[in-house]
Picture: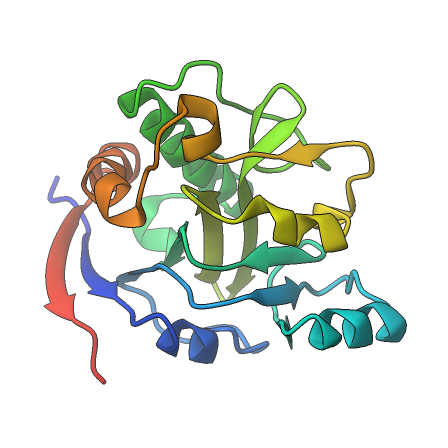
Amino acid sequence: MQQPALRLVRLGRDRWLRRLQPEPCTEGGALLLCEPAGPVYTTGLRGGLTPEETARLWALGAEVRVTGRGGLATFHGPGQLLCHPVLDLRRFGLRLRMHVAALEACAVRLCELQGLQGARARPPPYTGVWLDERKICAIGVRCGRHITSHGLALNCSTDLTWFEHIVPCGLVGTGVTSLSKELQRHITVDEVMPPFLVAFKEIYKCTLISEDSPS
């Protein structure tokens, strides 16, 4: 059986903000990747920030965006790999929960390829990838008429101090970490992109067709 093909699109640091629309996508078939500009806090369908908290984050110099993904508040900024698959789940034979598990598996596999052992997925409400009580990869997705949007955010060399101004994903008593912090060396998004794509193709059993992002 022929593997599904996806367009591989690397978005510019600012253009990814345009992809945070609350409405679901209407057509599948692309893998969107980027390293975001920032600092930006995003909230999901369940909210996650009070008006007072939102005003405080703006005062810190950050943007705050409402999105259509699942989950609560999280942070995005430089040093973070964003992966937003826009898939027709029917082509992949996946249900939504299976798609979330596949994204988690991609992040776990990337950690292994980077030499970081012990990363694991946890059941809801701890969706994402963890090292003990430290989250290294957040996941929030949207699905409408079988078409997915949003995806994962994996900390490579992210400035983790920005997470101190919120309760990430609404999980009290947990922490955040990054590949750089765990491996004790500076790891860029550019470094992890090739092994991440290897992991994605293995887990989703697809091929990727590279193309430039329109300006």
